[in-house]
Length: 289
Image (tube, rainbow, N blue to C red; front, side, top):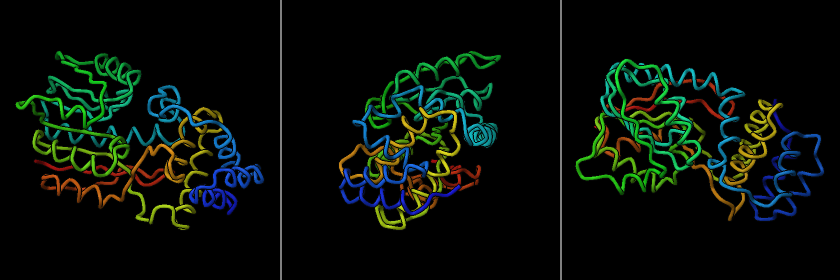
C-alpha cells in the first residue's frame, strides 16, 4: 500500500511550522488512511511520551510485522550469545524483555536491564526472571535512560556484552555517541539491532515523501489496533517533522551505526541483515572492544 501526494502535502505544511494548514490539508483527504490518522492526531493536544505508554507500545511490537521481526532478531542475537557465551550482559532499552528473555544462555549469570519506562521494565524483569533456566540468574532492573545509567555506574563495573534492540535510535545522536564510547570502555562486545534508513536531508521534499510512503505501509499493518496508530505511530511521525514538537527518534543508515561503533572504540565491526520491514530493513551491528 502507498499513499498519495495529499499526506506528503500535509507533512510539508507541518514541517513548515503551519500546524493549522497541515490539519486542514489532512482533513480534506480523509479517504487517505494516513491523512485521516494525521488529522485525528493533529486535532488533539500532544500526549505523553509514547515509550512511557506501555500498552500502545506493547501492542505495536506484538502485531503487524513485528512478531516476524523479533523472531529473526532473537535468532540472530541468540547465535551471537552462543558464540560469545557472556557471563554478564547489559541490555540497553530492553522494552518488555521479550528479546532479552529469548537470547540469554545458561552461561549468563547476571543481566542489567536499562529501560526508562517503569511499566515496561517491570514486564521485562518478569519475562527474564521467568525464562526457563537450569542456573540462577541475577536480574538487575534500572529505570533510567542509558546516559543516566552509565553516569552512575561504579568505576569497576563492566560487562561481557552490551546489547540494544531497536532502542538506541531514541537517543539523540550526540548523546548516543557518548554512550557508545562509555560502553566501549566497559564491555567486551556489543550487539545493536537497528533499522537501515535512507540518508535523506531532514524535512526535505524527498524525506517527507519517504515518510508518507512508509507510514502508510505501517498503519496498514494495524487495522485492528487503532491505539498503535494514535498512541505510537503518529507521535513518532509528527515528532520527526514538526518543529518544536517532542522528537522521539533519530534514526540513521546502517553505515552510520557501523562508523559510530568504530569511532567509539569497537573493533571488528560487522553489519548483518535481520529482516525486511515496513519501515526499513533491520540489521544487526556487532563489534568487540
